[in-house]
Amino acid sequence: LGGRAAVSKVRTGMLKAFVEGRFELGGAEGATRIVADARAEVDEDGSVIALRAVSVDGRSRAHLGGRSVPVGVLADLSEQLIAVHGQNDQLRLLRPAEQRAVIDRFAGEAVTEPLELYRAVRDEWLAVVAELTERSTRSREMAQQADLLRHGLTEIDAVAPEPGEDTELTEQIKRLAAVDELRAAASAAQAAVSGSPDGDPDAPGAVGLIGEATRQLSGSEDAVLRELGPRLDEASVLLSEVGAELGSYLETLDADPALLEKVLARQADLKRLTRKYAADVDGVLAWADDARRRMSTMDTSEEALAELAKRRDELAVTLAEHALTLSEARVEAAAELAEAITAEMSGLAMGQAEIEITVERRTVDESDTHAVKADGRLVHAGPDGIDDVELLLRAHNGAPPLPVHKAASGGELSRVMLAIEVVLAHADTR
Image (cartoon, rainbow, N blue to C red; front, side, top):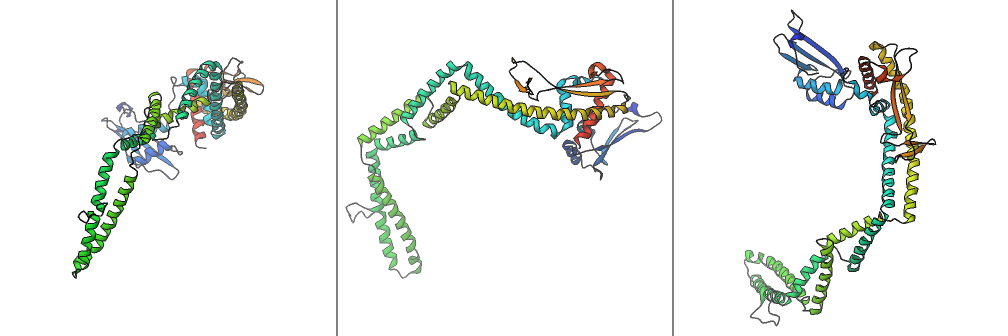
């Protein structure tokens, strides 16, 4: 197990004490990873040998699969493969949930699959029950909240903001407020690029100057100078495009006091929303989406409550069907498990003992909020099903079956747990 090595374990007159064991990994992921990390040799049958030695001088050695390893590796491996039971370990077997878990582990997929379906339906059923309860008990409060949300949505829908509109309006207002400065800058830039608007030859602009440079080079007989001509042509085309865009920009810069007033009014409408609902228009739109979602859960009309109640009842029927399927799987597994444990106990000095496992449905009354009707009876639909599982021990032939903690002594209970672990270990590798 990787515990402390004691020199007292060495027999008198001997130099060392050895203990070794062959372990079947059985596909246990954690154990397989530990063996691989230690680079231990796994035999052809999938087993590995672990060895521990302690000498009379107190030195301890550990080996796994033929390789020397730290003692901690054996400790890690033992946690994955070994269960030690003594009289202090049996208390967990007394818990009903633990007894049910034993059956479920033994049954494997026969229980796992219907249990997953049962839990999925149960989660939906509980959600509908909770929503119906909330709508029924908080109808007045929810109606008030719905009115407030409805008022906010009406106010937002009346303005009908667009995503990012507040940012766009800010830029447009800046442009309209500074139209004279922008026009002067754009006009000067256009003149510098395209030349004077009245065609003054003394102010040809960049396009004109490049054209003159092109003419000068085109008449040259020098090959180097002529090769510069196409590059000047490219620059002329680019500058012409810039000049045209500046002209288009100037056409949009007409001073329009009415438009500025309209844009300022629109901005004021948006600010009223952002003061009440969020920091910006995008936040306002997000608030509206959330409000619509919340309102969809606040319908407290008789029609809405009746629809929820109908859905609750439908889910309860489906839940009961899955619960019964799960219960039947457990009953079948319980008989097989009880037989296997009884057989295992015969090798643990309990040859006359017999295990019985009962699977009973937990009946309740209508006051149970988690009650469903299965086979005509109200049963408690817990997270693990509707079953109460109990292990019974018949100590010898003719003895009545009693709950295992009442019929067995501490040592016997430990042996029962050991038998269970052995059976489950075989079940895990099936």
